[in-house]
Length: 327
Image (cartoon, rainbow, N blue to C red):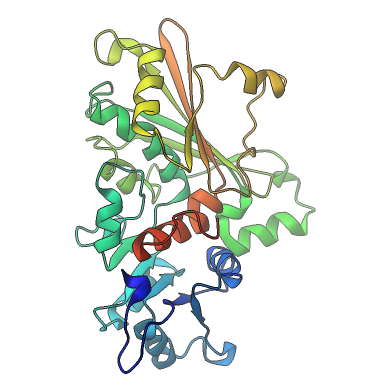
């Protein structure tokens, strides 16, 4: 296992981990999650040298696992700096999520995905909206309940932390009445998560996707409406819920709720709580249905299972240690 790797001229050592771009929202959270770990050696860059390409390259190549918490172009540049074949990169940007030579960092994606992650040296961390969408749709496409060519639509409501430091400052500064109401965006129909939403569900058409940012810090819920007349013959809400429950049976971080989630909605006064998975690495999946339609909903913390928590989970899988450690 990588956790027991022997480096040149040394005995058994703790895996070395470096976060490139730890000043951003995702990087800060990953660094905080790793700070209390006694099973890892955390490599740090002198703040005065954080833009020094040579020093960054040295640390990237010294690491057993390096997280890239950078804009897309910077992530590609950082990946090109790595020449040590033993360094595993986990890229939190959009840059490599559909690249054929990078493994998608979602252990629950499909049977065998954990083995692919363990063997990989290049892993792309899923996006927050995409994580929720893929967890809902991939099992249903695989089971043949949702046709791959179905024109699917999805709406996602998320806290403003998903917009990064600039948006966080904008909301927390206050005083702008336009920020009080939910704000749909991505209206060019070219959201950056669309390619991975197709590639990792098996859908052959881009989904019609509407993301909405709300005036709350974090939490995310993606909703996908379906009409049974467009699905496999005989498909109903129970069949959809059963397919999801069967796929994720035994998963630590994905929970499929009972059809309609009657107890959960009753406890919340009939309203859906978008923030109920905050501060966890959990994703909860729901199926609400009547005789003609179903509404699939996936809920997660956009900074947890939707970003930093997912990245740490994937690192644990890659290193062959307890998947839940630090989470």
